[in-house]
Length: 209
Image (tube, rainbow, N blue to C red; front, side, top):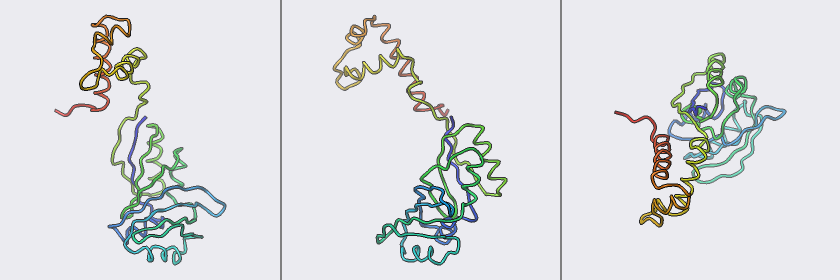
């Protein structure tokens, strides 16, 4: 399944609006859950003027309620409730779940999500329907590491690690590893070589020439 880094610019989001006024500061939406009044969010702020940030919640009509959970010299933690933002609506309507934390910077909300190609396409359509500026800044293929190797390859790699084959200096030779797995030295070498090739290729990706 693809792992996508998505950023959107919600026009009705109170944190996004504040961040546009303070483009050098960063905010993190740590969690969100629906309530009878709307959506309750938990935001962490790193800001030079935490007092102004707290006052912003008191002065903004969109904020239904808020509670200051923690305040420090350079930041704070605030829980607040607002009417369900369009970004949240669009994400849910596409069949995706909001992914936290959301990083908010200069009006943009940025998140990473693992989803299907179909749902990613539906997310784009939902953003367009809601007229939300957005961009997919990266797209990589996620994978289940347990399916990368065959059972035999995984068995040999685990044995090689536990017996010290990959340590420097080695605590186990290829001959000793082969004997413990009851195969010939050439068979052990072939299985390990193929497994190592898969692991390296997955880690490095397509080589750039």
